[in-house]
Image (tube, rainbow, N blue to C red; front, side):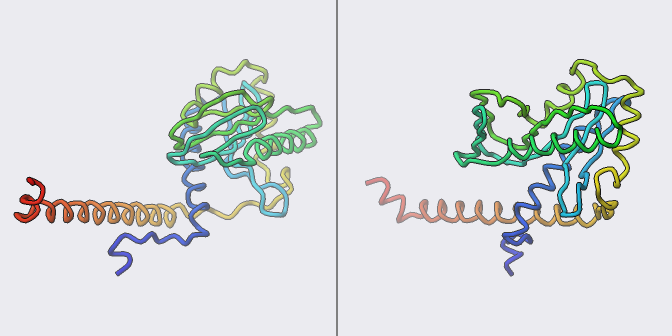
Length: 228
């Protein structure tokens, strides 16, 4: 009965996981538009404690770690060392910076060369993003701007550099981890369909309630009262 009225199939604890997964899939889809000279790795597991980097991108413009945040309908404010989401402070900048530093160290050790990695914070679904002051290291942008940003970056890596870095980056042992389990995208797609259907049912019931109230207001008795 609760499903009939549009109750979401997600538990409260699963809500943030689900929104994060939606954001990562959206950014992954956007990054797939990059040209063949680019290499993209998704959900790169790092270490043995379950950490991962949402996306690692290697191409002519260098190495980039992309931290995805899904803030649907939110107001994002960026000011130097702080990011507020609907007025609430976050750790987004610190985490994105840490991931890039970690990735550069790992890839540098694997290739026996100095590797720089640029941290990017890709925001999905925000109502607005106000950048009062750019952070000193992390780039903050809408996910839709990723491809343009990367493809217009100054070329600092040769095709041979890209191939070398990609060769070590695709090996799970480079990151000190085991191969990640195969993602069950079919099951996730089914869950997403169910979540969307529940949302639409809630909208339908809400619209029906509004119509019922309006119908009550336009009864003959209501019309008489309103005309007085």
